[in-house]
Amino acid sequence: MSAPGDVSRLALVGNPNCGKTALFNQLTGSRQKVANYTGVTVERKEGRMRGPSGREYAVLDLPGAYSLQPASLDEAITRDLCRGFYPGEAAPDALVCVVDATNLRLHLRFALEVRELGKPMIIALNMVDAARRRGIEIDVPALEQALGVPVVETVAVRRNGARALVERIDALVPQLASLPLPEPVVEADHHAHVRQILDAAVRMPTRTARVDDVLDRWLLHPLFGLLTLAVVMFLIFQAVYAWATPLMDGIEAGFAWLAENASALLPEGPLSSLLVDGVIVGIGSVVVFLPQILILFFFILALEESGYLPRAAFLLDRMMAAAGLSGRSFIPLLSSFACAVPGIMSTRSIQDPRDRLATILVAPLMTCSARLPVYALLIGAFIPARTVWGIFNQQGLVLFALYAAGILSALVMSWTMKRFRRDKSEHPLLLELPSYRLPHPRDLAVGLYERGMIFLKRVGGIILALTILLWFLLSFPGAPADAALPAIDYSFAGRMGHAMAVFFAPLGFNWQICIALIPGMGAREVAVSSLATIYALSAADDDAAIQALTPVISDGWTLATGLSLMVWFIYAPMCISTLATIKRETNSWKQMAFATVYLFVAAYLAALVTYQVAVALGGG
Image: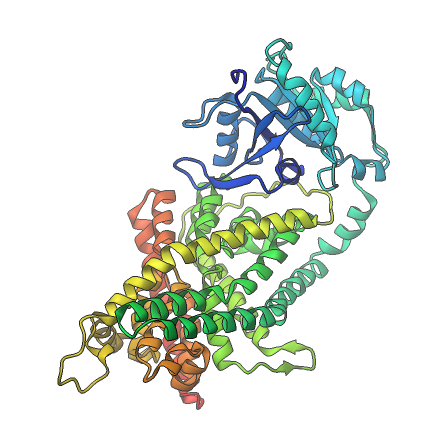
């Protein structure tokens, strides 16, 4: 228990899809911080809340869990934090268990488990507005009596929808030391107890909403459902280009102006070169792609908030099972579109070790957001921005094809692994299909802000460091007095690039590309800033040094080289963090080495075929 004057700690717990994160955003607003729990990459969210009395509260949004008997790392963390056993985390003073009023049959079972901990506890009866629209009548006093803990109605997606909860917390927390705690009695049959509670406190006309039934009839149809999913994904990638172009033009113009003025103000020398060619040009060439990344995340967050993603997992289960995966693999693989590291970590929710390993090994084939700047650069340089068939953006079509190639390659790889493994049994998929709901703008805004800051921190951290390191390798040592070649050819990086170019020449890669691949091992998007730095330093004059990278490579590379590099990035194991995560999650150097080798071989062969075919067709 917190001492008088200390900040009281509240922990929000609940099943996935109960609206817990929306409630957390409602309670804390912008006063929140996101990190990882010690020693793991499970996301940790904590925020501050002030009650009507002026008392401050620290609110912790715990990972969603179906049970306190953990089947995944998320559930284990939630259990240990609720009990106060997690290393480095103070025990919560009270638990706020969030339940979905439209799905009490499932969510109350977890609430009973939480009650058995014997901790001070409040039930947040969330989504009561949706329950009323469905004709569900809930007798809150009867529910309180049956559970033996306070119950407060909330609507997390409405302004002031959590005011009653805040007031109840503010009134109860000062009395926690004197309040009787829930009886820590272990239930023999939670399902039977839930049925008794529902009979006593809830009148439910139908078990599912009529709108859910109508939508599921189409969206879960074996044919129309798959077509709908394909159309949705296709339109997302069209929007990535159609909506982002004006914003990207503005960012590009801003960094060009900044570089030009910095170059004019600073005297010519190493400092000016570092700031203009290394920092401004390098970072600007990556930040320009932030609008496209945010648009992509906007759609992914909207699909997640709407309740559509679990249905997509269900819909794809049969197809993924044929390829040696399960429907549960869909969420980790979709997360890998943001970054393969959290995607691989989220495979801990896959209980079967065989399916988990297969998902880990194919997750790097998903087109993560770090590849998007590279794709956007190459597509903008080599694919004309014109309309196809009257309505489709040709650049968006190519981007969709690159994403589709990654997905198809993952299915082929997992199918190949299935053919060679000993256990060929099928494991059924069991998951909850939540009610459909409209995504709330505030939750989308918070999610986009978090992901945007993560991207910008990468720019400010690893990308800045690697860009400066590359600038040093490209600038030193200087050319000798009798130099016949550009100075960059005599630098450390120039020598490395020329040596690598012999091996990569069959793929159409020049020495500049080879140099950019090296820092790209730290983060794929660094390849873009690296190319910008390389061409800025090798330019003949200052004007050429600060011009946009796209026209430089479109004039200097062939179409075959551009296509080859696009295909290379579908497969290449160019992310040390991903490989390290594979090692940590599998606890096997062998599996990490296997992933590295198969991805590199696939990248080299695919890029080789692409380049040679393109040259044969006249693209060289």
